[in-house]
Amino acid sequence: MTATGARVILDELARGGVTACFTNPGTSEMHFVTALDEVPRIRPVLTLFEGVATGAADGFARISGRPAATLLHLGCGLGNGLANLHNARRARVPMVNVVGDHATDHVRFDAPLQSDIAATAATVSGWVRHAGADSVAEDASAAVRAAMYAGGQVATLIVPADVAWSPARHTPGSTEAAYTAPAEHVQDVEEMVTALREAGRQVGLIVGGTALGGEALSTVARIAATSGARIFAEVFPTRIERGAGRPYLERLAYVPELARTQLAGLDRLILLDTRRPVAFFGYPGKSGDLVPPGCTIHEVGRSQTRAVIDEISSRLRLADRDIPSVGHPALPRPPRGALTAHSVCAAVATTLPPGAIISDESNTSGLALPAMTASAAPHDVLTLTGGAIGQGLPVAVGAAVAAPDRPVLALQSDGSAMYTIQSLWTMAREALDVTVVLLNNSAYSILDVELQRVRAGKPGDVARSQLRLDQPALDFVDLSRGMGVPATRPENARDLVLDLTRAFAEPGPHLIDARIPATYTGMTLKALPYALGALDALPAGMARRLARRLTP
Image (cartoon, rainbow, N blue to C red; front, top):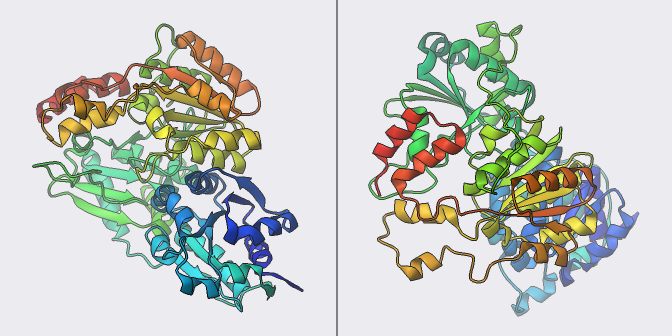
C-alpha cells in the first residue's frame, strides 16, 4: 500500500496510541489536513493560536497519560507555541509535535518563512528529527516512542513539505529498539528508612510527578504519618489528586521566605520524583537555594520512585495502615457578601462536582484554594509547571478532550488569560465541558510584590501603570460571548455560587467573570505573610517569623 508521507505519519501516530491532534496548520501542512479525513482514529482539534495547541496537548497528556500530537506551521508556528512547550517540558509529559517545513528544494532560496526549526525545537524537546522520504514510517513511530521515553518528554518531528506530499511506502511496525528509562542512582534505601525511624520531624518528604496520585500517594502519606516526617507536594505539580478521602499534602510555597520557613529545622530531605527546591528567581542579597544549611538530600528519580516508596513502606511495615486523614482543613460554608479572592475560592470548594479537573492558573488570587478545597469532592489539580503564564485555558481544553465525562474547571487570572484567550473559541467549537472562572482584578498583582522584592527602587506612576490592566478595563463577558461561550458576571458571592452550580449542571463551556479587588496591589512586603496566613491557614507564629525576615 502506498500513501502520502503525511498519511503514513498520521497512521503511525494512531498506531502508537495518539488519538488527538491539536492543530494550527499552514501551507506546508495541507497534506496533513487532507490526510486527517482518512485517519478517523485521530481527533483533530483546531486552535486559533499555536500556544493553545501546545498547551492543550500538554493538558491532554496530563489526564490521559498518552501523548497527543500538535500540527504546527514552520519555525514561526513552533515559536508561537514555545512557552507552553516549556511548561510541558517541565511537566515531563509525552507530546509529539509535527512541524511542517519548506520543501527540500525550496530551502536554498531562504524564503521569508525559512528558519532553523531544529534549533528552536531543541530548546524544549528531548528528541528532534527530520522525517526522511525513505524512513517516514520509522520516523513517526520513533517520535511516539521518544515522547514516552523516561515517562514523558516533548518529541518534535520536522516534516519537509515534499516528504508530506510524496508517496511513501507504509511498513507498519518498527525494528528500532524501544526506549527505556535511563538508569538512575538511588542512595541507600536503608539510610532513608533509618532516618525516618529515628529522626521524626527532622526528615522531610517532597513529593512530585508520578508520586502525587493513586497508591503511591497513599503510601507516601502513610510513611509520613507513621514516621512523623513532614511531607510537602512540590510547588507546581503536573497533576495532584486532592479532596475528601485523599491524603492532604501541603504544597511547598512559591514565596521563598515562606518555603524556607516550611523547611526550617530539617536535617534530611527525601525528594520523590521532584527536583531540589530552589527559588523561582534570584533576589539581591538572598540565596536561591531553599534547602536548610547542612541538610542531607536523598534524591529519587522518576524511574525508581515507586520501587523506593514500596521498599520503604515494606521496611516500616505499613501495608495494613489506613490512609491518614488528619490535617484536612474543614470545607468552608457557601460564601455570602462581596466577591473577593477568598470568597471565590470558597465558592469553588462548595460547588465542585466529584471527579472534577481543575486547571489552576489563578496565581495570587488562588492562594486560598489548596486549604479551601482540601475537603471538597475528590478532584485533580493541574498547575503551572514551568511558570510561563498562558497555560491555564489551553490545558483545560486538552483535559476536557482527554476526559469528556469529567467536568473541567479553569481558574484563570485576567492577565494570563489574555495570552491564550483564543482557547474559548476552541471550547465552543468542540462543545467542551469547561467552566472558566475568570479572577478579574485588573492587575498583574504578583508583579506588585515582585517589584518590591527585587529592590528596583520606589515605583512612580509610569512604573505602576505597567502593572495595571484597567485602562481600558477588559470586558471578559463580551470577549467570551464573541467567541461563542456564554458568560455571566456575578454581583456577589451568592450569585457566584449560583452561576457555578448552573455551569457545572449544564453541558458545554461557560465563563464567569468574577471581578475582585487586587489581592496584593499596594501591599508592603511585611504585610504579605499576614495575607498568606489569613488565606491559607498559615499559623500566626509562622506569619510573625516571616514578617521579621521580609524587608521592603
